[in-house]
Image (cartoon, rainbow, N blue to C red):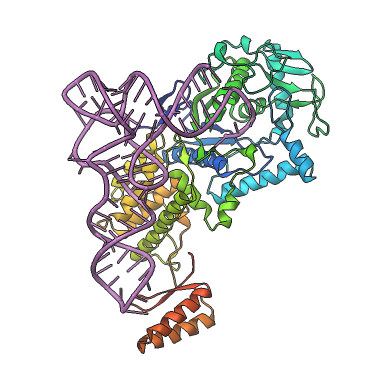
Length: 479
RNA sequence: GGCGCCGUGCCCAAGUGGUUAAGGGAGGGGCCUGCAAAGCCCCCAUUCGUCGGUUCGAAUCCGACCGGCGCCUCCA
């Protein structure tokens, strides 16, 4: 079998055939950094990470680029509304640049905590204004633009296949259904490439351009940066489903308008994380960040595990009950892996856990081949995760093989399994050690009430006592 | 108004024409234990929103209806 991916362009699952298998050109839409990424946003980055890891797992070379949109977006279409960065700046008293930098750092921190591999390039929009201007100029030369009311617009009537990705029927789109009509536009679907007329004070991020001092529109930065780093034709471009009708539709119009060539071969879009009340929205204010989950006692990787439980093209219903289930499951995987380490004789002294390729002779390959097939089937992570359990539950599998099998799967899953250390006697304070001794004496004397009191006392101090045939073990609580 | 998606056990969720409807969590029972915890074993949907239809056969295809949601504004 070979990798099959669901292409939004054409709405069908297709065999993945990159233009160059040694360097798959992957572009994913990154964050807009005027606020923290919420956990719904983060689901999208986990998805892209699994995609990239899968490609690498299957032997493809990958070049992954993700933009950081640090230029302000308006909260409304057509030069109305307010720039989100400016708004944030006004509210916090910091400069827009500081705001962008702060949230960019927060984003990378969260991504790292989720075991998301850093893309090879993470270009900032503000660092690519010349490329953006050049792209607009090329569109202008080819006659795709017009100027009205001080802004440069893209004229979608010049691009015959406009809206193909989204299956838009332009004649049925209802202009102004939710937004005021921009009277400068010739066609309601036209969009701004360059603004010179800012309606608000304090527009801090402005640059000189052939059309006047101003700032770029909201879709052009992705076209400019993707083409700068990956060339005119990409293999895969991903993002959330919300990008299909506008952002990605406009990106295609911009890129293909300039090059006359197909911009992206495979468009992949992830579905939303939803709450009872619907999707989590960045502009609604009430949203959960990864830090919120951490404060509530979850490991970031519990959330990653949770994301992997559902297919990326399905809505995933978030609840703390469901997250608890993921946490319980992941903790169990961790302890099972530690048990395998013990069986396989892996200690921190012998040091290494098996990391290299699993030998063909290993019985674990039976599981790895179905695992691989699950991923090749449009990234069925839900099934892929179930293969971890299958390995863990197969008692006929030698511990070393089970261990190497699970760690091989970890290359894609990224659940932190390769970072698991053998379980060992925890260094405990002298006071705890003394209590432990006291408790053993109590147990020998069959004074269990006292033994239990001591156990509670030790628990208060942050350590869990677990009795076993070979004597009591002490672990840090909540491991 | 237009376009689109979803509805599977207590919860999350896979499966999208054909053996017993993955997997996890929770729950129940058992083994083990002084008791716990952990671990292990067993149980937990004759049924896939409802009603029709197509088919030898449907959770999977078609239609209607009910319910939920997304997009057409920035948004993962």
